[in-house]
Length: 133
Length: 133
DNA sequence: ACACCTGTACGAAGATTGTCGTTGACAATC
DNA sequence: GATTGTCAACGACAATCTTCGTACAGGTGT
Image (cartoon, rainbow over all chains, first blue to last red; front, side, top):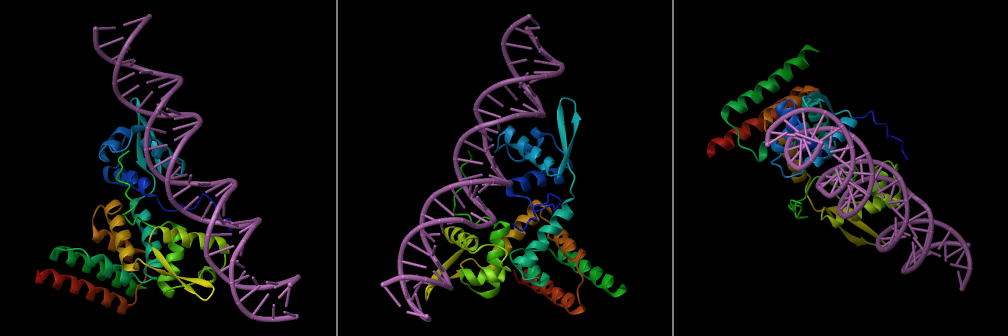
């Protein structure tokens, strides 16, 4: 009974919710039918609708009328959601070490020289940003 | 009714489960009481026990008798769990771009010059690894 | 008008999570 | 040998998540 129940905290998304959000982030917006199609139609229409309604209740998406249908769009930015998810992983799994997270990230993946270069630039920027302080 | 539910897939951990796993990864192992203490005793003894039993049922932890108590230890490595979690995030939130994930990761954090340097080394290693192919 | 589409709303059912209370086993201590 | 303390097992309960079935509403075509 710690009472941290407040619905203010965004909290993370469950698997299915994340599937839906992923589509909306990628496409920008979508009707129930569009989202369902993007998911390969593996789930029923009403299921997708229900998920969107739950997500809306949580404040993660909004909708506007479009003809007869509703068009849903994300209200939380993917970067913010990603930041929260990463923080959680860094703290709980990598014991606060972003390095270790990075090591694991690049472990199982192949990168082109260009990608590596861009990632270096990202680190350079972070370094300069630190210096200016 | 897609039926791809097979309980073979490790799936992700929920918040509370991750709290518990985090302790076991950090400490190596722990009895119910130890884990509970590590969590600041904010949850009841039986709750921690139940979580450990659920985790055991899922194959994420195991236990051995130690005197009168059980000593639980992780069966899944943190790096593997982290890898799965990262894959999920990269795919669902960053649309497959590890770069963008990295950008978000370093965005809200401050790093020492040493940390940046070590992260660069990680990228160097990944690059060399790619070359050898 | 009537029968269909297309779409949303409602609500229920099953699974899982997270929280415990209670019980019972076992050993140490008085 | 009765009491107390430690600890696992069982089962209950509420909250969520996920999946739909069913019902209802507004157009469309004949």
